[in-house]
Length: 114
Length: 114
Image (cartoon, rainbow over all chains, first blue to last red; front, side):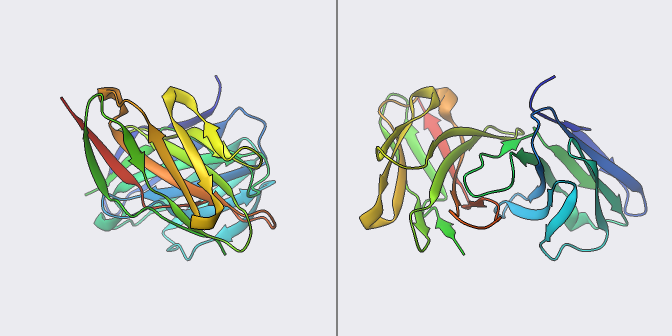
């Protein structure tokens, strides 16, 4: 496989469920990102990891918990979500997280909270 | 910090007509500039990028963009639009220093009519 792969592609979960989103990149990149894309809002950067350490957390609620066990894998653990958390969650990676680094995106996980 | 504005939320063009999508940025120096495209339910794909040199940049799928420093703009153009170009288009700006991720605009949705 090449590029950035996200699983699952679609997820429906209840507000009391616990689930995880997975992202894997096969590009040898050192930086990985989680974005949230809602219907009426722009891309929202949620978390940034560089060399497996979190370097940015844009005031995301604690019901979203990221995990980066190595430079190729990124998880987003979900717990006690709200209906307004329904969105497309996009994972991306880049070489080093610098301004000139092109970001490569996965196809996203469409999350519906019921 | 850098910022980017895409003034047009939605644009409709006829197939075969020319296209120009606007992007304005704010940054203290010459930034790195990118255009991405997102088809429905998919992740973002890079169309083209500007780092330095020639201000007219060629990208994939017949797209081009021109960097105009005096106008702080990086507009995307295509001479003849195809129905398959219907998608969401995002402009992004990267800083030339520091470890800051790309900043994305809110996107412009392109509809193509027969």
